[in-house]
Image 1 (tube, protein in one colour):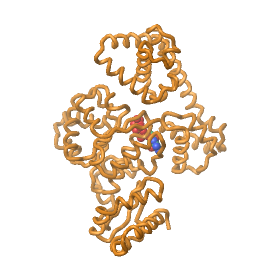
Image 2: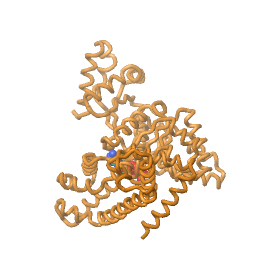
Image 3: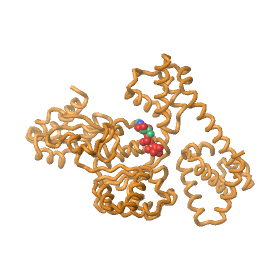
Image 4: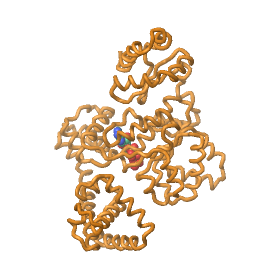
Amino acid sequence: MNEYDQLWQQILNDLAVVFSEELYIDVFEPLKKTHKYANGQIFVLVPNEFIKNRINRFYINKINELAEKHYKKVIRFKFVTEAELVPEETLISPERNLSIKYRPGNLNRTYTFDNFVVGKSNNFAFRMAMKVADQPGTVANPLYIFGDVGLGKTHLMQSIGNFILDNDIHQKIMYVKADGFIEDFANLLRRERMDDFNQKYRDIDVLLVDDIQIMGGATKTQMEFFKLFDYLYQQNKQIVITSDKPASDLKNIMSRLTSRFEVGLTVDIQVPDLEHRIEILKRKLATESSDIHDIPNEVLEFIASSFVTNIRELEGALKRVLFYCLANNLELTVESVNEALEPLLKTKRKSDSLNENNYDKIQSVVSDFYGITIDDLIGKKRHSKYILPRHISMYIIKSKYNIPYKTIGSLFGGRDHSTVLAACEKIENEIKQNLSLKIAIDTINKKIDHFTQK
Ligand SMILES: Nc1ncnc2c1ncn2[C@@H]1O[C@H](COP(=O)(O)OP(=O)(O)OP(=O)(O)O)[C@@H](O)[C@H]1O
């Protein structure tokens, strides 16, 4: 018996106690085995629509609650009839010629909830994404996911699409990067093929738009996107958007759009801590097709400590280590891994130390400009003569280097993510209304450019 059948058996035992014998025999007894497991869902085959509807209407919440109790992880049960198990391939027209990796709607099938490693930094985002996928269009619309580069926004967004498609293969999902949308819209203007455009974007159930910040400045595209957004929203079609910043921070995106983004639910993904990064490495290692499936802990720790802020880089480092050690027949030790990663680490060290020097320079230019000491700039004093320069320095570091808010916080005496985020937002908003502040920051920026280019 596999683990999903075991879990189902435990749930059946509980259901037999919770419900009357008559009901149990009618509804649950025929459902002996699970059919398959995919992307966080266990499928159970039911004999007919009647039983399926009965379970979905009255018992599904209890079943999922028991599943979480026994399994200790988020998992869902899905009850399907034989007729619903149409193989996906039969629904794809041959001319679409989709590769094995991609599914209808431009979805990358490798991005699933299953292989998304959950930790403190992404737990809330993950849970909300699961809820949205479970009940598209009803729980949170739009779902707005933001976070720094390479932290799993696309992965989570596409997991939603894959989950919905696993549930109902007839759902029409459309995943698009914002630049793809801009291009489609430009083609539409050139060829005046509004019907094609509308069919692609309006005749859908779920819209997933990645990296919305790229739409900044593309005013006509934004106007078209605004119309599309309203059209889908009015019909309760689920919309999911990702971005590298909160909606209120988006530059050159019209406010009627950003305010729409804020109507739903905003979740963020932070930089994972060391333990979480090691867990990600372990899970990636298990799926790598290399012969190496076991790496000493100290080696994993070494890799995870060297690549902190971007999971894409972390994955790349692991791949390089595996190839390098296999090709050179090396044992996986910290020394050989260091050797394998040396070229990557060298470039990283160079750019990190350049940037670190530049953060110092920014702090020193700002404190000079306002006639305060660096200690007061980064310290805890709450007087306004220190607070404004402190906030300005944080804002300038974020806008120049786009490093995580938490990292900026560490440059200012260990302040947390939300303090830095609030400071950056405050300055960003004030610049719009306060001309003298804008002039001051322009002047500071010129001085910084002068020093950092030396
Ligand atoms: N929690 C996670 N568990 C497993 N893999 C992850 C996780 N987070 C990110 N990844 C992996 O890291 C890589 C980068 O993730 P993804 O492309 O989703 O990041 P992103 O935030 O969308 O980046 P960008 O801002 O560049 O668009 C992907 O291969 C993804 O599978």
